[in-house]
Length: 178
Image 1 (spheres, rainbow, N blue to C red):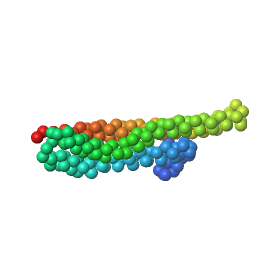
Image 2 (tube, rainbow, N blue to C red):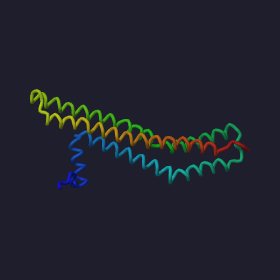
Image 3 (cartoon, rainbow, N blue to C red):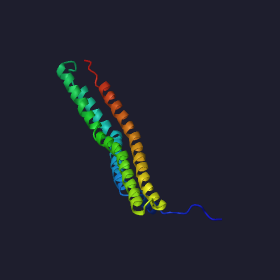
Image 4 (cartoon, rainbow, N blue to C red):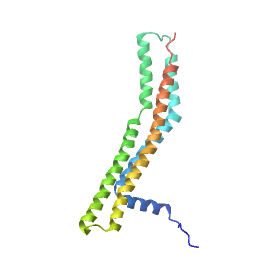
């Protein structure tokens, strides 16, 4: 019996995918790689470094004898703000990468369709086989851009929720009694 599936080494499959999608697919892959590097950096920061930073800010606040005056309130706001600024580092860049992925997918759609129209202009009404290659170059980057954006949206939402929660917890830990 003939097998329907055959083994394609992973690197060859990736190469074929990039050839199928055209030049824009490389740009989408680069943006996606950068986005995920930033996401991992934020996740590692939240897991490893942030607890010590938050503890230091709370300890700094707890070591104050006076916490009721306007001056004490400003110091509290400064501590919360400086920790929040560190929490939100790279978040706008992640959001930018998420927004760029589908736009680059649309750019791939346009370049693929231009290729289809070039084939139609050269060969008259169109050679279906060469038109199909152009259509695949139009759809693959769109799909890749959307998949990359969706994965980034999910992780960005998780990171945003975590940042908001941690900022609120930090504010709650720095009480203004005394």
